[in-house]
Length: 265
Image (cartoon, rainbow, N blue to C red; front, top):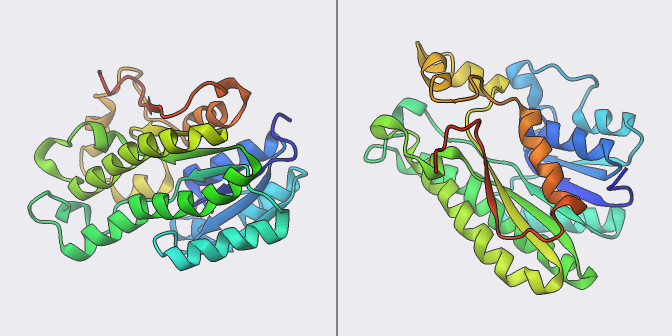
């Protein structure tokens, strides 16, 4: 129960990787705030969970949990969300910026062809959401002289996809890496640690249906991973646990690739 008494806000947590983070931190004793555009978004891809919502799953683990529907790409909604968390719990100790994903059709995500609306939506989901949420919690964390922020980038930020698809997603996630390093420099004097996880290919219901189901795609991607398998959400959550517990008390401004060896530098 390393995190007993701590409050963790996790964005995009109603399913998949965000849900995994929420359950792992709840098992460590943290009270959990689940943010998502739709707190029942797991239903969209028929993801199996053990209760009506992830909030209910968290509460079943014996900690406090609330859900807040908000678009992290819209600053007023983010500020209202953080205010609600502070009203409910009095403090925020951990922010996991997990919300993100590619907007639009994968087959239209090429660097020179992506529609403007897809580019802007992808930047909002990934980069601007990370910035807005981090800015909103920075003030309260400065006042309490401590906190942990964990951002989420992607392998696409470190290594271009063959052929150039996923371009604007990669650009947004590259921005997350740079932002992490700058924010860490600014907040370190306040005892706030800022780090970033960089997943590669993670098997979630959404990606299995939208990307990995394309002919030959999954086999091609797995062939690039020395460990011989795609990650599961829990693989990423274990690294998040490192970043939000005492195991990383002297670690900030770092971006750790969780890729099974796919990134070779």
